[in-house]
Length: 196
View 1 (tube, rainbow, N blue to C red):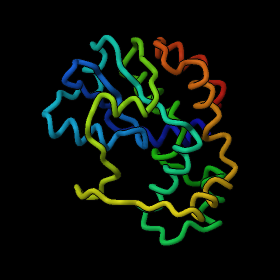
View 2: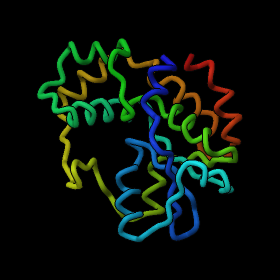
View 3: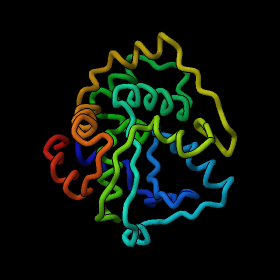
């Protein structure tokens, strides 16, 4: 499982400096599109990969894991143009035959950040993000904002996946560190056995 999830996050690592000098780390399905829009509209400074190492403190917004998983699976299916979220597709997700950065555990996003940053992170709820920025964006395709309706039936079908291994580690991180400052390397080591 670890190897499949870690392969999903091999892209450039990016953090954004807001006008109030707070540094935030955008995570898929945790306000990332809103942060990107806000950064573009306001010409905010962005740091990438090794430039992140020199920073002092980064805010990481985490989302309620089950809600993020359901939304992430739905977004993945929409982007891949799956016309129906069917049982075969959901079974592949359940069995880790299909994984995607939209719904892998948030732990792996933190792991990705830890490759370039060795300091402290402030763990905040994604709902706190909107106290920092006014923008509300949704998923974008080819630069066009899109609305992705999640029907009640789709939500039920996705939530019926055995998804505990997708959310358990995030639930534990949130229970222990929400609204706290923690050394990122310590957090990664502490929860590594949860994802092995």
